[in-house]
Length: 62
Ligand SMILES: [Zn+2]
Image 1 (spheres, rainbow, N blue to C red):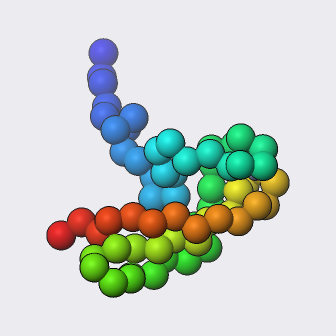
Image 2: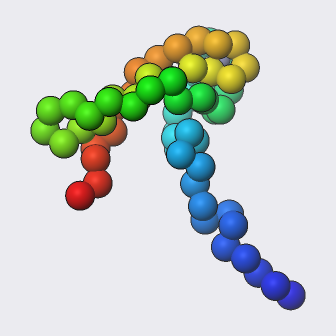
Image 3: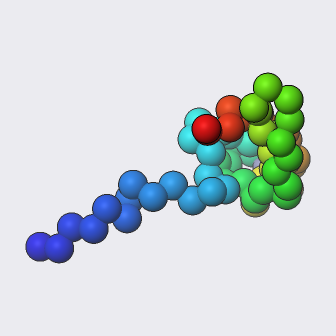
């Protein structure tokens, strides 16, 4: 048995808990990432399924 921790790797464009409000899909494409004030990041995302766009806010690490 060769267990590789691949499942621990989180692709950059997968945001846990984020769901498309239009179709419920959890797969998003990141259109752009911007640094914002107070160490936060703004990500503009597009649903891979229906194309609905939304903005998410994330705390920058470090
Ligand atoms: Zn969608």
